[in-house]
Image (cartoon, rainbow, N blue to C red; front, side, top):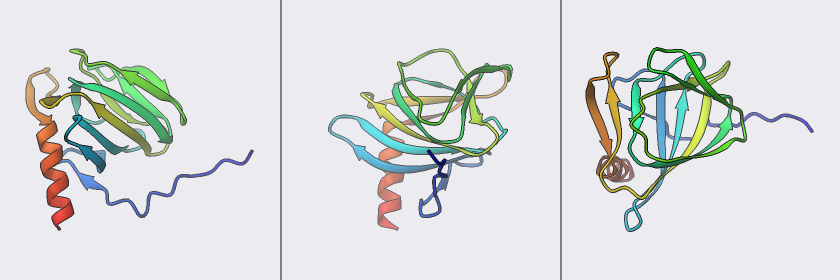
Amino acid sequence: MPAYNFDDSNIDWQRLGDFEHLHFSILNIDERNNIADVLFKFAANQQIVLHRHLAHNNTFVIQGEHRLYEPDGSLKEVRPVGSLTASPPSDQPHREGGGDQDVVIAFSIRGESGVLYELMDDDMNVIGSISFQDLVDINKSLLAA
């Protein structure tokens, strides 16, 4: 069977503030059930900001290799294209990134109306957060533009 590359050229990728190696595109927000479906793209051979997931995340790797790293930067796990993972909330911080090409991952963030992610510095101090309401507000502003 031939291999295919995912064409993301028609996706309206957004940056998350000044954070490097990370783009996202909100696919759908279900405010009634507190579900956000978001595409994330992490740069090849890079690591995004240290963070922890405070909500359940289902992920599906669409393109590339999804790499997870320990807070010290050492490789923790590799999820190949086609991988589906269900991850409950966790207090354990980690970094994520792409393998030898940018990775595109569909995230279905479920069941939490409050803080979804805490962003951390290298000393594991919380420097910011992303809430469900933040995603709702971003989505509304993008739809209005």
